[in-house]
Image 1 (tube, rainbow, N blue to C red):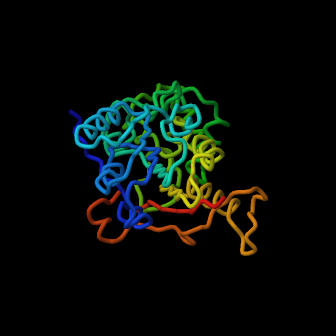
Image 2: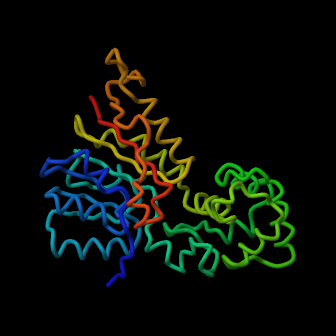
Length: 300
């Protein structure tokens, strides 16, 4: 039995778009701890869930004991088109880009700079991980990921420091890396967040190909939406949100009823500005503070 610590984010805001509707076909592309799916099931909807994580499969099997209207696929959401889906088109598709609290607390994955674990950060089971990046990427590659994915202004300085330090001793654990960051002399962006946040974000994005996975998904998701269906995406940092914002913008329906993409499909953008968590939710779940929800209604 999994000790499921995950709290779903902005579930009331998500449900508000389908309030009063029943028996919808919903695709939860990032099942995680199952919080969103459970609420969908409680409201009488049929859920198709996807997640790569082993613990998600266990949680989904537990849910099946009480709800027969859920199907689970163990896969990465980017591989949507390779799954033999029972349902081919959906009334609502949710993509929550946050990793679950279960993953955050898993020392084998090592996502948290507050837990001393072996450098990993790969939660998808791939070959690339933080240990390989830190100890074997060349200076230019390190500078690239810390600049682009971590948005660290002094990325070159940090890359040089890492290369120098690892030449003396391999960097093996999260706490060793945090101490390296502390001694690097790099001026990290904000005092409002832990100084290691940006560097850990960069390593996590690189280890899991997060942005590439998102863009791959967005290129194909329209094929799985019923007419007037909703696509809801929760992002957690500016890089993800920018991709999602641009996707809806580039595929929106214009005032003259033509589509921005010059194709025969697009979206009515329902969130001119992204929705954010309420103060009440933040009191219960501080991890929701960076979440942004964007929703579009599919038109064909």
